[in-house]
Image (cartoon, rainbow, N blue to C red; front, side, top):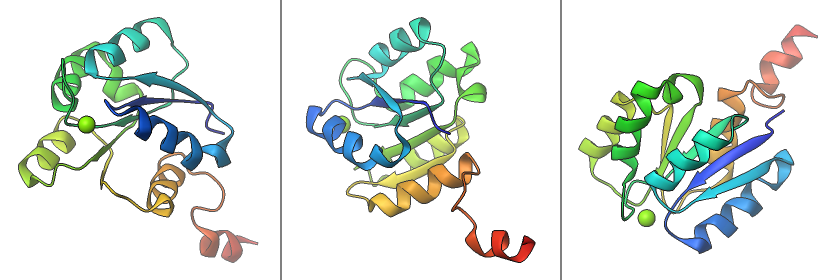
Length: 135
Ligand SMILES: [Mg+2]
């Protein structure tokens, strides 16, 4: 099961919203308001299993975070999903090139995030048809 998620977003309201959307996983949520805070949290907490990353943030934005975190081995170890209002295709492509596993545009359907998480972690419910076929 998913135990701990790091939410990186400069909006406190978004952090509350993620708490609701992630309720089903019973996971702990660590909060960071920008990329710099996220690096600090990651330096102290070694049990984070997923990072939900905004792009547009003060101090250090999401793409800068990916650039800093990648050489530290963080991005290869912990899956990152970018969730951003930024519609700029070049930012999305750059984020995915920097190692993000998925991208969602705000506002997003919770079901889309659930599906992405369940695919990444191969949680039950992600592929009901295949599960049925194997019974
Ligand atoms: Mg933002």
